[in-house]
Image (cartoon, rainbow, N blue to C red; front, top):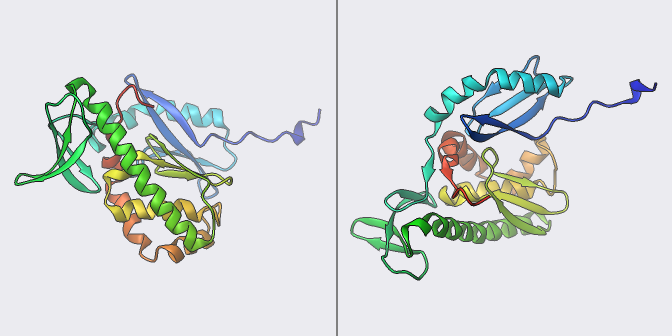
Length: 249
């Protein structure tokens, strides 16, 4: 009785998918223009698109049937990159070679040498990933706090809190309460890219949607927003390949 009053529950924003023992977060999008389910791999990560009236159970079944298609393309799209000595990390878009200092104590430091920029990391090799991760997050938080405050002032809104996450398919999210979550990997992108994501998320405090009014708001605070948006479209998938240490969430 009254079954006609029951509303179909909204699908989740993301859904986990196990591929060869590795959890992959698949973004979920409902589209009024979609006529069938579609699985794609844009720069931001795997995306499952649903028609408006689709049942979530059918969408999950579709995703499971096509997980092998996704598994075959993910390794070619972006090999996992680890934070460790000997690799080059693109700090603010500039490759920095990670070099152990040999000292047991100290901070991660930037050094400019004849061989190019370096990140000098103290401590035991087993602790290098965690030290690098913590340091990169601190740098990201500082930059994102600054740019969020900058765009908030320009748009006349208030950011309550800036937090970092390690999402595998999103660069940021904004709540109506004023809390903004950013992906820590933005510190690996050129500064204009981080600035674009900050402008994008702060603009959601004015328009909580992706309407023409929203994009006009982003453009108002960042006139050359297309530059950062285009960079993410071209290189975002490779940036997502950088992995946090396994013990980090």
